View 1 (cartoon, rainbow, N blue to C red):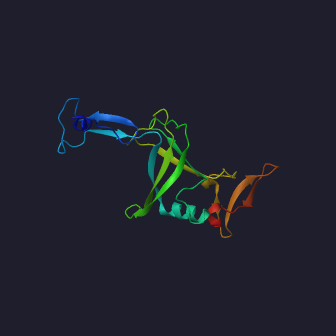
View 2 (view 1 turned 90 degrees about the vertical axis):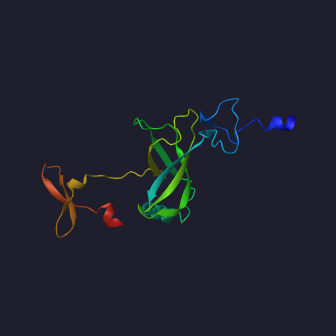
View 3 (view 1 turned 45 degrees about the vertical axis):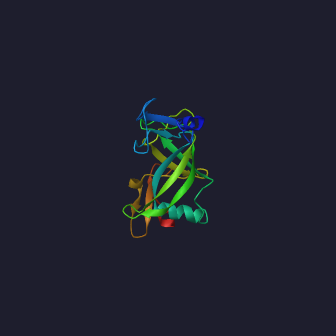
Length: 174
């Protein structure tokens, strides 16, 4: 009888939060009852997002082919209300299959989630940062001019006169 009674206690194999339940205490359940409840482990939580193969190839070149768990790759999330999530995610997994319709690979980042701000199935916007930010001189594309010699911008000199200054763009360096 004690052994039969032990089969009446159902426990989750993982820690997490339980969603709506399909049955209540005292209901008779068997193998045809189906799912009793869904338990979601939400701390830490995974955020999955697609990354283009071009970006994956660039990252692989910078990391000598090893990008499955990039140590200096940080993932930042923005919640649906537009506010940034206050924890930084770690790039933790890259799928081994390409979605041929979109030419992307699924990537997983692991985020700490102690306040349960991120929910399973919710949409967030992600931003991937690699390494320390490098200072760069950035000008609007609309300021670039093109002639037979190449790309230039117009700058104002100390006398208040416009002069032509030849520039090399980042696209030209690749």
